[in-house]
Length: 442
Image 1 (cartoon, rainbow, N blue to C red):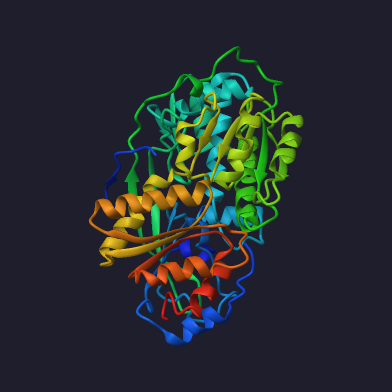
Image 2 (cartoon, helix red, strand yellow; image 1 turned 30 degrees about the vertical axis):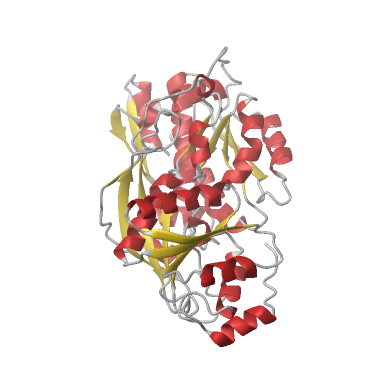
């Protein structure tokens, strides 16, 4: 997940680099007397560079004192957006303060609609069989209207969207993507430094339990999109641009003539953040609403909690934000897709950024869930492949009362950088780091 503020997407020219990969891929802070003692002692860990990732790169201007994050670097998936598309998302929701996964949500919806049109049916299984096909090896088109015209003329299409070229591989994940590199300023907002393009070669290997099987229904004739996106919980900040992206896509689809000659429909549900796990019951609502495609969830862990329920109901499960590598080999019956790249790409870009910055001995602090563990593993792999050493790797419970033990363990190893793979609990971890004399500017 990533959370760019509006101004971060403007006025930057992408600088490309080739990263060809071999694989496919909270509680309260409660700073105690030990933390206070560490702060007074200072220590050799003081001043180590902090790095954020997509899950915790957001605007902290209202959360921390000025300068707290100045110089922190961050990576997250997504290309630079055009001002025109930003404006269209703003029209959809004037209260947006970020564009987080809005483009990926838009493209997931458009791709699904084009797949239904290509199949001539709106059932989930029919759509799933055409999703990869409409993103590869056809005539290029970049809008639903233009693509629809080509499909209706019998032309194979290759849709490239607002989130970049969408080349979905054999198991439904992107085989190319862009990762942005950012730096935090004194006001605790972040500015773009670079955009790096990377490829994740598609192995072309599809297991029998990753293929659509059985009869393929026609559907009810109405293309219906269910939105399983975060309206509550620690990930609620991700919801507004994702909802806006889907609803803007539905608007564009209907203005171009709909799907199979009828207007497309959409319906909302709240995925939450997994604590409590409300996603299963919300998924039931979407299935009862005759959803052909469910867009979401944002969290990889939440998606894993409902993927079987969705796919076994014959509904396409299409996430705009899941990055865990677990989905590449998941037995999804050929019904799961995503427009966000797996963590294997961000892991390599983060590792290369660390090496370029001269870091040789790093610590990693990551959420103990499918997202945090997968990204931590990929950062470690690519960093050590390039000659670096991970001196401490701390997996934490995001609902823990405090994070002092993990912070003290990292400080004791004297790393020259810390990669923090977190969600909203970053707001509790950073003050604990400051108290312990660890991290940016300490």
